[in-house]
Every structure is written in C-alpha cells, then in structure tokens.
Image (cartoon, rainbow, N blue to C red; front, side, top):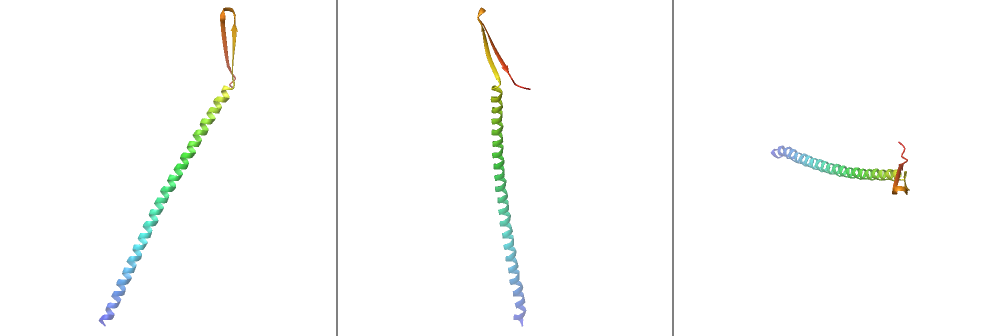
Length: 101
C-alpha cells in the first residue's frame, strides 16, 4: 500500500517537471521572438532612414539644377552693346535686362 501512496506523488513530480519544462520553452520562444522583432524593427528603421536620406539628396540636387536653370534663363535675357564715340575717344557700354517682375 505504501507503494501506491508514493505513486501519485511521483506523478505530481513528473507533471510538475513537465510544466516547468513547458514554461521554460515558452519563455525561451518568447525571448527569441522578442529579440527577432527588435532586430527587425531596427533594421527596418535603418532602411527607411537610408531611403529618406536618398530622397533628400535627390531633392537637393533637383533644387540646385532648377536654380542653375533659372540663372541660365535670366542670363539669356540680358542684352549688351557698346557705342564708340570717335570724338574724344569716348566709349559707352550698355547692359539691359529684360527681366519681368
């Protein structure tokens, strides 16, 4: 009879060990998932920051190109001519911009 009374205690110990193992496995899986999620979030954040940087560089280049085009356009609207007055060796030079305000 003493043997029968020890048997349920052994079952309780085995089921307690199984529960402990299951809990440890769940904790380990949770930790791994958390680590992978964190690393993934950091990688995604770094990737989006890089893309934002590339967009900013492209917009800056486009802005500089537009400014250069505006300067070239304005320079094409400037007229220069000169007038040489033979009396007294006078020389006049004229510059006119056709810029519209």
